[in-house]
Image (cartoon, one colour):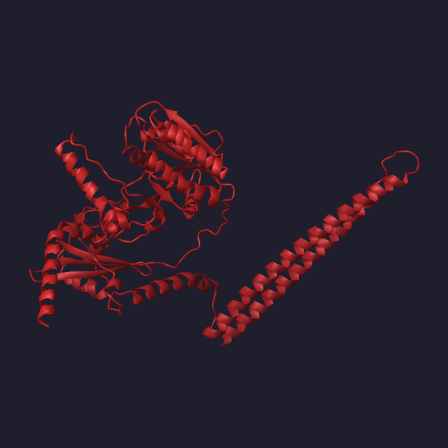
Length: 544
């Protein structure tokens, strides 16, 4: 109690001293101001060396002095306001210290205040452990709310979320995953081989000869799962002293509190997007593309330039006519049509279209003719690309065959009504890297496309890997406003057997979902079952 009283007295004395210093500083500033004003008046004189000064020169001199005085007053007011703000901040800090001292019934020194933040963080991390499903279960509404575990050994990870590789088991491909599991195993071995308390150390000293030294070869398997708002749980099992004895370690990596990294205003008003489309024939698809372009880019967005790079001569007039009709009907002039009389190469077309732009550092969107996008996607494109910092590689939603989805060609609705993101209507095309938003400067600095690649495919992965090997941030995320419209895939007869098989597998994956393909495969069995059911119903009706 005595210490608390002494602390309060010391704090009050400190506040009074700070206040006195503030008053003294204000007086000094005022005195300095008066001295400068006096010196300025005494040393100033009219501009003319001889004869009495004119009324005009006195007026000019007075205006100069008035301006100087106004600036001095403004400066003093600003300094006084800053001093008041600093004094108020100090008073609030002292008040907080006093309240803390009063509530604890004892003195709280500056060192204790400095230690409070790490202590609070430690308490937060412990609370994360207590809230996570580690030592006890929690009630869940259904089987869909379960957070499943992954299992792993020294060499393999067995996973439900298979990612881009589609492998149910594999060596950890991602560097962060490899380092994560290596750190967990190292921590577990260190815990097993290092006594954690004085009693353990005495026991270890007594049994130094008989104790087991654990190595990675003793590790049998582990399981792990992540609750994204709490942390990651690891359970590791090791062989024990005998064949029926095991050692199990449970580790938990708690997630810390959220930290605000950035709070900024992003103005996309003047961000123009140059949409570049390479094309060869496929005029019907191009008309469909332009219908969507007119609605989204011209009528809704209005900040878009279209560059079409056409390969060949055949059907060129139809493409030109489609562009001219759109320009006339929608009053749209921001387009460029380029023609190349050579074999189609998607990478070369995009590269030429990007380099042909002469209007500064524009945002590029590399697109295909069978792509449908919304106005929201254009804003997403603008927000996720930044020159010299990041490029955007959206994962588009690839549509299944509408004839399979809706049962027959007669029941297929309009394109806009087909764009529903569900497991039976399509899939996230996470193996495709052709649609991308990036600034022209980044594209040129990275070296552009490999123009030696002919036809479709390969050039997009090559460019994507260039960015992965650079210091730019690659934003890879599903986009709810970007769709790949289904079109029939042809597998040429001249392909070698292995490539033909791969082509057919790709065709099957793009045709329908697993369940829908199963229904097609067993359709004869299903039809036979339905016929039997119908006959049985008819016989029952006759009996009654």
